Length: 85
Image 1: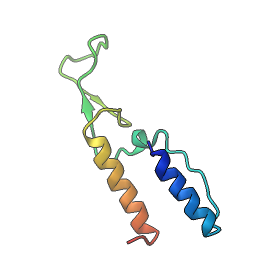
Image 2: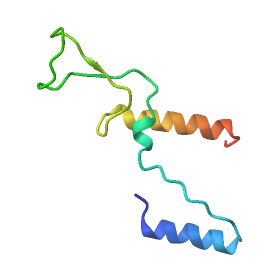
Image 3: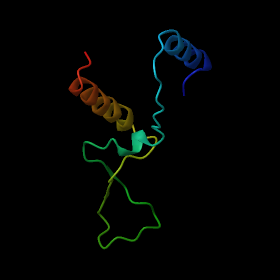
C-alpha cells in the first residue's frame, strides 16, 4: 500500500516534468513469483494415496516467508535486465 503523500508527490513530479503516467496493477504479483520449489503439508480433509505425501505448490500462498524474497529476486532481475542500476 502506498501512502497518499507519496502518491501526491509522484503525481506532482510527473505533472511538473510533463511526464506521461501509466497504471500497472500488481494485485496478485506475490502469487506468481514462484522460482524455487515449495511444499506444504496437506490439509486434514485431503485424502492422499499415501499418508507421507506432501503437496507441491504451483504458486505461492500469502503468508509464506519466501514470498517477499522471491518477489524481490524476480523484480530485481527484471529491472537489471532492462538497464536499471
